[in-house]
Amino acid sequence: MSDFLTMREAAEKLGVVPTRIKQLWAEHDLLKVKQDGKPMVPAECLIEDEYGWAPLPPLRGTMIMLLDAGFSDEEATDWIMSYQEELGERPIDSLRKQRIRDVRNAILPLTF
Image 1 (cartoon, rainbow, N blue to C red):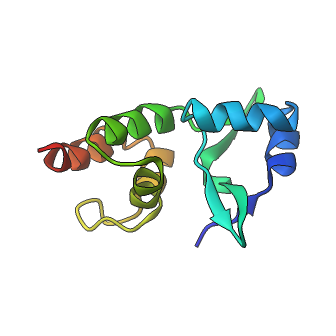
Image 2: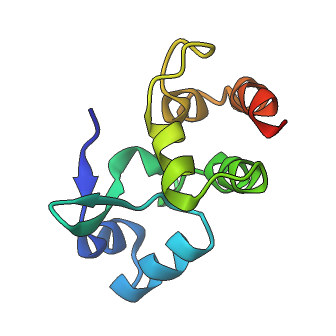
Image 3: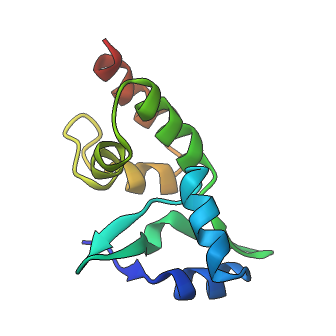
C-alpha cells in the first residue's frame, strides 16, 4: 500500500509551487491517482538524494513506454502501482531499486 501526498505536500517536498505538480503529471514525471476524488501523488514517486527531493527518474520513460503500448494514463499508473508476477513486486518498487531494465522488459510483451 502506498502513502499519498496532496499537490501541496508534493510541491513542498520538491520545493515548487503546487501548480508545477500539474505540469509534472502532464509530463509523466509523477503519477496521479485519485483518493476520495482528489488527485494525489504516490509518495514512492519521489526520491531523496543529497540535493533534496526529486521525481523518480525512470518513471517518465516507463510511463511513456506504457502509453506507447496503448495504455491510458490511468491504466499505466495502475500497472506501475500493482503487483506484477514477472517482477515479483510492484514496478514502482523495482524502479526505486534501479531495476529499470527488468520493468521495461516486463512491458515488452504488452506492446504486441
